[in-house]
Amino acid sequence: MIIPKPARLSPEQLAEISAIVEPFGCRIQPIIGAVRNIYAIVGDERDELMTNRLEGLPYIERVDKMQSPYKLMDRRSSLSGNKIKVGNLTIGEDLLVIAGQCTIDPKNPNYFYETAHAVKEAGANSIRGGVWKPRTNPYSFQGDNKSLDILMEAHRRTGLPVDAEVMDEHQLHLAIEAGVHMLQVGARNALNYSLLRAIGGAVASRPSTVVLLKRSIHMGPLNEFISAAEYIAAFGNPNILLCPRGTSPAIDGYRNHPDESITPLLKEKTWAPVVVDPSHSVGKAAYVPACALAAVAYGADGLCIESHVSPSKGIGDDPKQALTPEVLAYTIREARQLWAARREARAHAPEGISSAK
Ligand code: PEP
Ligand code: MN
Image 1 (cartoon, protein in one colour):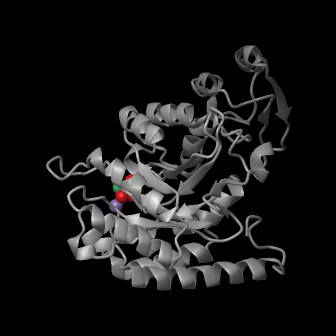
Image 2 (cartoon, rainbow, N blue to C red; image 1 turned 60 degrees about the vertical axis):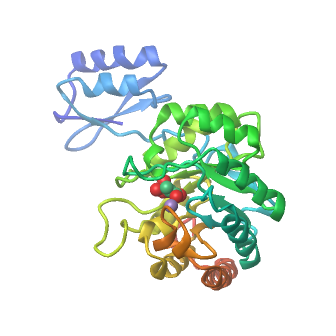
């Protein structure tokens, strides 16, 4: 939809606009108003170059797109019935819980094996473990290839699928070769389009590999977040989980600004499951359970929670934000009860609640 600066476009201006949109297979349809006209673009209006050319005209105020920029991830796309499986769980049939250490300590693999068993016992469906870490401080521990073997050994010992972040193509290929079941795109790389394309290409022929896509750190708009998922899906594997994880600037006292409340907004736009990470949102173990429950109340399909058998002995984020297995078990129990209660209540929900409920 074209919103012009003047109340009506002149015949010459309309001709100029038509000459721009016709090569893109579109035409212009004026919508006559009492005070001013607006102009519909009939056809596929998503081409960015066409929009940029229109917005470059001095008499155009702006172009509002009616179509969403993401064809595959759109809630109305033919993929909207896509069922994503993580291990034995089909998302939507129960709350997905991914849990485990922020960072695997290659010098102390037994902590990770114990954590893996403990999070399974607590009710998690999948184990997370940071092999390579995006660290603000360049002198902090950056991860270690050896941790990939530890991660896969934890999978063999527990039978649960495992999740790890990859930050570049080399790590991506090592993770794929090792058989990592879920590839995490971190908040710092959520807009790294060449990495997103590389991941899309790598998982295209592996439909059982799932991508956990974090939201970018700086209050990224929802369309930007879903479009990042579209980058991956465009290669052929749409098994992508959207992960709000808190944004900057932080609320004083929390690590970030908790953003689980965007869940119903995402669900109105996309069919992709929402898996909230309360650990990086609030950043302190004491606040994580409440944030996890809030996420479920907002309609999240899953949670990604940092947990460690002995947080004070952990590395990376674990000393400050990992839940002990006991608190994790309590949180998962409460979260699953709330998830089930919501599902039951939704069956009798009155009109007027968000269409995504
Ligand atoms: C993590 O999951 O440990 C992590 C670094 O996450 P984020 O990319 O959300 O900061
Ligand atoms: Mn972490």
